[in-house]
Image (cartoon, rainbow, N blue to C red):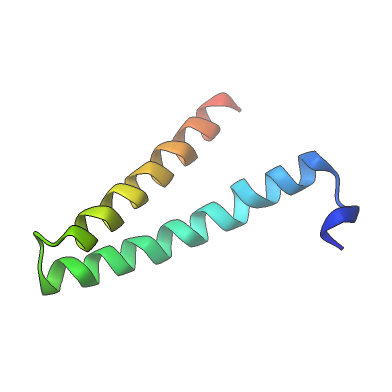
Length: 64
């Protein structure tokens, strides 16, 4: 079914649904890791991944 969707619709689905969901999951995981050990490499990596998705989301919103 994914193949039947147009390229623009697939892109829209990724930006409108998948990116915010992944960002929310990363935010919760980074908060949980930071509570255990804020200076751990995993906590830093999760925070940077979440902030990268935030920047992507904001940039896409500005372009519209």
